[in-house]
Length: 464
Image 1 (cartoon, helix red, strand yellow):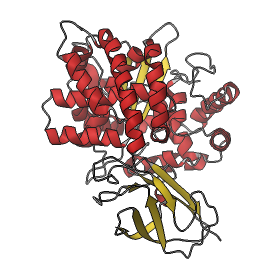
Image 2 (tube, helix red, strand yellow):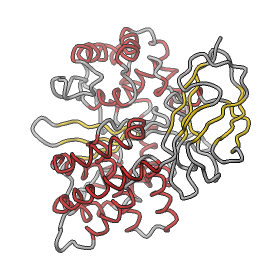
Image 3 (tube, helix red, strand yellow):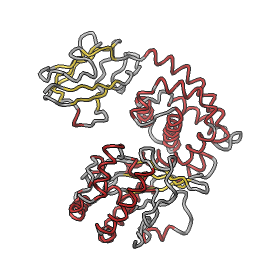
Image 4 (cartoon, one colour):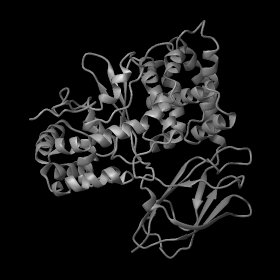
């Protein structure tokens, strides 16, 4: 097979940067990522069918639409339907391939995303190699190289706005993982964090950034205020992941207890265990610390803390305070690694407070018109009444899409509190034979004392 001339092919734009090796290299476009996103676009995966960057996605359709019945595409459809190969599972495969589209290492149960099995992975790669030739993928990439270069150039201001020196200074060491920023032109609003474990040690950690903004000419645009916080967050993973993975045992008792309290919130964000939860919480607290150290307004810091708390990280404020204590004692604690036992002690204190706090949180008590999960709801009902077990502050509403997306969100005409402030009345228009889903959060649903609602997901289906 012709060599895949792949990966970091935006080399010309990097030549002026080689003089001194940066902590994290400049962003790239990665053909493996583009290729896999194209394949699963053709296979019909909704998350890979974004059209925000229409200038590019139209080119994909023009070149590849005639290959929608290719054996690879049919196999990809089967993988999605039978094994849920979608979202980050697709990107996991991309970064495990080399320049010839061969596996970088033998596929095992511990290498790829767990949704892949070995036999499917091997078959997929075989079909992918055939598709690459038959669909003239190399010609497509060559024809669009100018677009890739321009897109990377558009993203550079976001990257250059990050104070990379802060990371090694704050953590007291260089990262033990190689961090790679990939701009994914066809991924729309989805960002993915994927990793490749190098067989002889070390790890590549990828921040695969979607492209969901364009300028008046239709060219990709990357507003710093939108993309910058994502990079600040993702950079922290290169330092935090190895730290907490090394000393998991000392956090286990606290982590397991806290996870049980916030399990619903964590699972809704794909954080399936206490270890991932602890990594995410330290990454998020460190991101807040970055903003503090760079003099951001207190209102911005307060908003960040509130948002993280609403996502279930109830101890975020205490953790940020703890990071401040660490930073004030650097003569005693030269690195974050040396301070890890102190963080473990802090979590012991958080555990009791969080368990007690959880008992005070308001909860959804019932829904008047139907039971949550009912699959036979009359489409003619005009109201959905949510009853809470405590009085709320009447300071707004926080009702969001669930995992089923906007298409499952009910058409809400009006919403109001009842006089006793213990119920919310939603005036809706429903349609027959349709699945509905929405999520109530504690962002605005709070007690008069400011204690947020326990997150609650509502699912139902109307009759035919």
